[in-house]
Image (cartoon, rainbow, N blue to C red; front, side):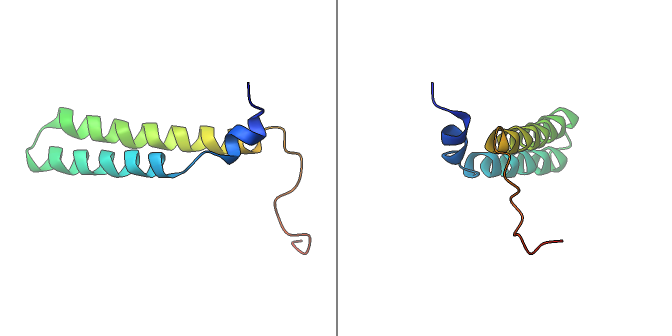
Length: 74
């Protein structure tokens, strides 16, 4: 099993962005066809993408005790 630092450094943001964009497009399509279920499905995709973004950020910094801010930052 790879360490979290190696696995997290290879994660790309593209799948999350694609899922978020797809959710927005599905929600817009649901509004156009006036279907509350389709709008809800689109919003669910957006919330799923947001949750994955948080999990990816947590995984990227798990076990890394270094402060990512520049040293000149107060």
